[in-house]
Image 1: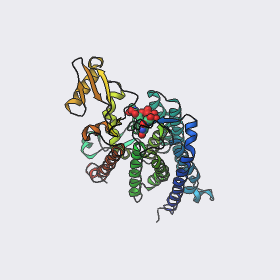
Image 2: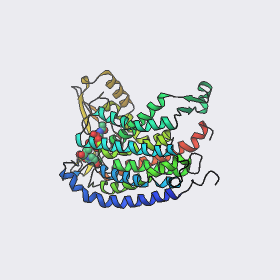
Image 3: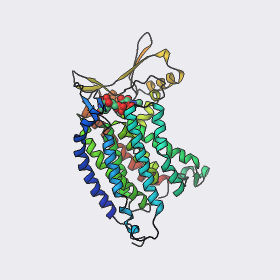
Length: 404
Ligand code: UD1
Ligand code: MG
């Protein structure tokens, strides 16, 4: 091992041990703390149950705090070799670590503010952009590499590499916005928000472990430090958020998760691979575009509709008059109908009943009504299947486009 003795597994093992402790701490903390949330008026009503009970909401703030505390305690560990000899302290690595924590911490605060204050849509786009600024600054100072390698088939036109310059920073800022919101809008049934985040983080973990033997091991080791405690604390939350949910995760959790993924992707130089693990979220986002940009009306909640008699969930709909939607809305819905990806009913007066455009409802169109837990499991299986696809794209297929 002449590439320096610091390529050791002991910090990872210590991190793993701390993460296991964090899991047990969170599992004990959540039931103890959840009544405090109800007292503080932080609760929601589960719309897919008959009981109408108050369910504590924004428990993501608890897992987020444990996650951050675990990492705060872990900070000195990877640097112990340098702490007692004052030479060559890797200030740039240390700075990355701190900036990553700052961005995540900032997002946790902003996400919690969203849960408490119920912010508007435009804030949901602004907040992650602001929270990613410290990170982009560090990226600028440490790497400032905005070159991308052009895929082989395109090289006759673009050459070997292209400098994206400030557009690369724009892309990284947008990545944070996308990751945070994409998880938040694939939501509304018990266990789905945490479940999908767990599949994504497990995929990132696997990818890091594979790459640990490669040249960029340092970046992947860095990502592992964040993924292990993230998975541990989220697993604890999953236990309580699974059907029937005792707690809701809140936007706090969705923001925290998205930001954590964006942070490791940016600092670890694998932000393109991160997007591969978001295939269902990308599909859900694209499908949602007509409602997100109000080309057709978007109700406050788009989650599936509960049927008391059958105890099953069916599609939820949005109702509007055909002459009230603009030209873009007309065009997109025409295309969607031609592709047969919407359930569309129209009466003589032009009143349209259309399903809310989410992947969850789309699934229900294809399968018919389902029990809530079955629906969550099905969607999580799709998430796993797309991660398998992501690995196929990342490894065998990439070899066609790049020399590896
Ligand atoms: C996003 C979605 C919205 C969806 C909501 C569900 C978009 C643009 N927004 O809004 O369509 O309805 O998430 O989280 O797609 N809830 C349940 N069961 C669950 C989880 C949540 O009934 O398993 C309900 C509870 O009433 C809870 C509320 O959803 O209080 C939380 O919604 P919130 O996270 O505030 O909604 P948004 O993220 O704004
Ligand atoms: Mg939400």
